Amino acid sequence: MKIGIVGGTGEIGEGMALRLSPKYDVIVGSREETKAVTTCEACREALAGQGIPCSLSGVSNQRAVDEGDVVVLAIPFKHVAPTLKTLGGFEDKIVISPVNPIERETYFYYAPPPEGSAAMMIRSMLPETATVCAAFNNIAANRWKKIDEELDYSVAVCCDDAAAKQTVMEIVNNVSHLRAYDAGPLAAASMVESVTPLLLNIGRFNRMRDVGVRFV
Image 1 (cartoon, rainbow, N blue to C red):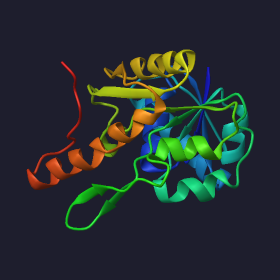
Image 2 (image 1 turned 90 degrees about the vertical axis):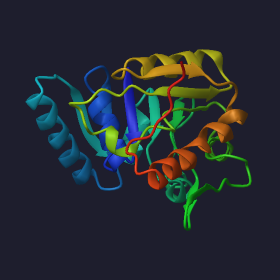
Image 3 (image 1 turned 45 degrees about the vertical axis):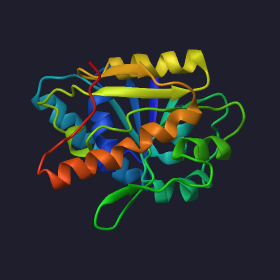
Image 4 (image 1 turned 45 degrees about the horizontal axis):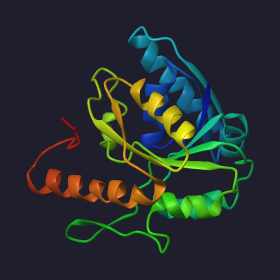
């Protein structure tokens, strides 16, 4: 399976490339292809240092969409709409949204768009044949790149298509010690996204690091 990452040179995108490329063919996309190539070189070097083989290629964001069977939108919420307006080719693709619409004042809070969630907004911007799944929303950003540490979080997955949801859950379960849970339809994604500012506030006000979710 080929997984394209739009925004693959950001902190989360690069971390996901590190974690996914030992199991999948990962296509790292960027607005600047040279940055994607450089990111892939850094990822290969880091994984080689751990004795881990990988499959990585650096391309433009558009090529990441074109070549991926599954496409991850690893971009901040404020960049989602302008980025999607420049891209096409999402027909018949599974699109994973780990995007959380969050604002910050003296604390973090959930700030969803009129559609109710980032995932539902993304769904409204893509072709009818694209299938959007919300996943990976509540994983601490800096943990992705710490490949010498296991990721042991629970991951809620929201999607309206059972087969696509199963595919995404299998991807989740192939990353470190992550465990996927069916969290219902895409309309429930707002509940999952809104957990992230809660985790950030708990971490900030209690001086905790890498606060996450684990269902037991």
